[in-house]
Each structure stands twice: as C-alpha cells, then as structure tokens.
Length: 263
Image (cartoon, rainbow, N blue to C red; front, side, top):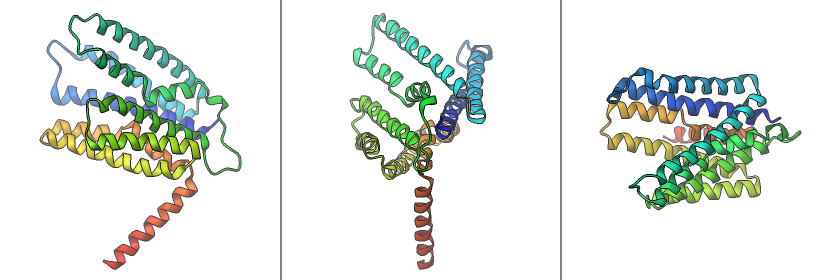
C-alpha cells in the first residue's frame, strides 16, 4: 500500500470539507441567516461536514485504506444520484439557461479531483511504494491526473470566460499533466504547482479587491486559500521526489543569499 498517497487522500478529504464548513459558518456569523432560515436548518450540514472531516483525519492518522474505500464508494454513489437528480429537475424547468449550462454543471460535478480520489481509492490496495526508488510514482501519477482533469474542467468554462490567464492556465494544466504522465517528469509538476499557487493567490486577491476589501470577502478568501484542496495537491508534488525538492531548495537558498550579499 502506498502510505504517502493514502495520507494525501486523508488530508484532501478533511481540508475540502473544512473549506465548506468554514465558509458556511462565515456566512452565518458575518452575513446572517437567509429569510425564514434558522440554525436547525444548517445543523444537518454541519454534522455531515464534521463526520466527513473525521473520516479524513482517521484515514490520515490510522492509515485506514478500508475506511477510505467505503467512504469513496458511498461518495461515488451519492455523486451519481445527485447528478441524475439535478439533470431531472433542470430538464423539468419551464424556463432554463439551456442545455449548455446543464452540461457545464454536470461536467463540474463529475470532472474534478475528488472523483479521481474516489476511484483511485477503490484500488488503493494494489498501489505500492517502489522499492529502491526515491520517486513516488503513484503520487506522481495522481498529481498529474488531477492537473489534467482540472485542465479539462477549465475547458468547460472557456466558452464563458475567454480571458488570456484562464486560457493559459488551461493549456498549462493539461500540458503539465500529459508530460508528467508520459515522461514521469517531476520537475514539470513542481513548476506548474508553483504557477498554480500564484494563480490561486492572484485570483483571490482580485476577488477581494473587486469586493472593496469587505471583511466578509477577506475572511472568505483566506479560508478558500488556507483550506484549498488544490493547494494540497500542489504541495504534494514536492513530496514525489523529496531529494530533488531539497536540491532545488538549496539552489534557491544559495541564489537568495547571493542576491542578499550583492544588495
């Protein structure tokens, strides 16, 4: 069993649900309840989030592949049923934005990193750490597939957002995933991970600026960055080959001190 990949999955599950829970609590405490809504209406969502967070923590701490497989199987079923119900309700509406919007929502629902996590988890027992190798190939392939899936997910939105940064990030995400899978190239994953982290920070800073640096939007952006599942994957790329990461870190430190001495 690949314990590093198992731990990453546990962290992803806990962090993603923490993101949802924290944003829900932020909305309730800083914006307030919607009309006719009370705490009893959101209590089931809070309890469900806490349960999922505990699953992630147990998977990480106890290295429980069995719990992860059971949870993943349940989430796959829930996702499929949820997608079918959404499509059924949407098609039953008298007025709707069109089939394109439905396809976009279904693509967002099914083409994402967590569907990758759930399906990979079902085969976790067959994944082993390569003896004598300092490269964790299972983790490399997972990160590459996540970037590839994210890229295809971006493609759905290009029809609505033709901005140059979105197009560039879409192409870079797909290219990084393909090259990493084809060549087992860890460096391209790390390079894209750094760019992706910068993109994450920039988009949230822009979000806060557009909303006039309101307290709620600042808090929301901080939660979205700190508890970002995508950030977890980006950081995980640096643990695919720890020796290589240490080597480049030493290079950066040397360049920094050289620049500092010059100034």
